Image (cartoon, rainbow, N blue to C red; front, side):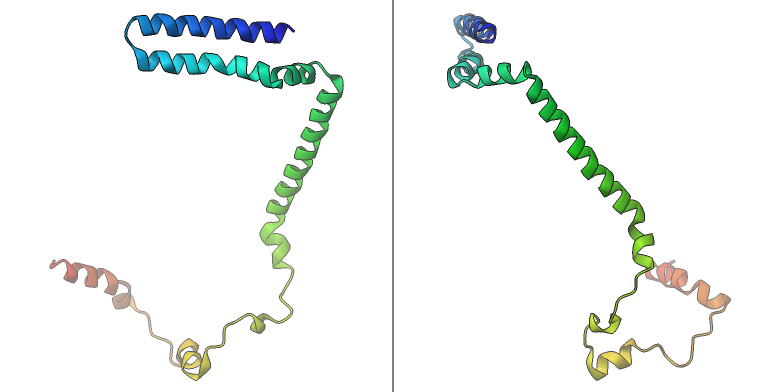
Length: 140
């Protein structure tokens, strides 16, 4: 009963502000204020305010919110544990058939996928080859 009265008073005050705003020839703003001020009356008429008031003062509803919060904490805790285990849990397990999930490459793809028999010798000259290529590209 009190919630409905408060909502009605808020709506009446909002409509009064809308009238004053319209008197100052700011019609768009007045229409917007009127729209906002009619929302509480609409909520009272649909019964949502009464439902919210009954829920706010109900011990059963608060116990239900507590149960929902506990369930959320359990879900969040299990997700956090799964994320921490993440790589460590997966590292111990190997796939039963690891080649079964690899794509079929064919003869040409297998030859390209194999590393070359003679490894490249890496020396001090090879270390700066990409830098030299970049400098040549820019004409330096």
